[in-house]
Image (cartoon, rainbow, N blue to C red; front, top):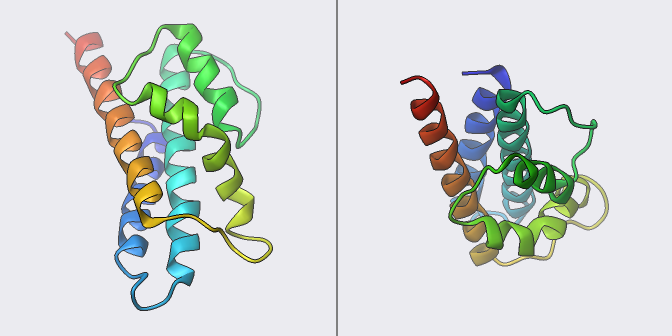
Length: 131
């Protein structure tokens, strides 16, 4: 697997770990959001690289999703990602600058489920291509 893919796995784990610590300090919610955004972004870029699709240097989840859709790549939570794409994109800057992010734990968990769905579809694609 690519470095981009491996980074997405690490960032997803960091997001899950941070989410588990928000009872101690709500600053962990910003970390969970940032890492979740990065995990989704890097996974989408890894998939695009696998298809040989060039993409602009960006953190824009909607842009990356549209490129994925153009390739014919599909995953179970595609509609959910479409609904949350702008929110997730805003997490990249909102978690690092300003007053932090206002989001529910449930929304971050939804994004985690989107990541898992996207990852599962990618692994199935890899398995199919390696046959």
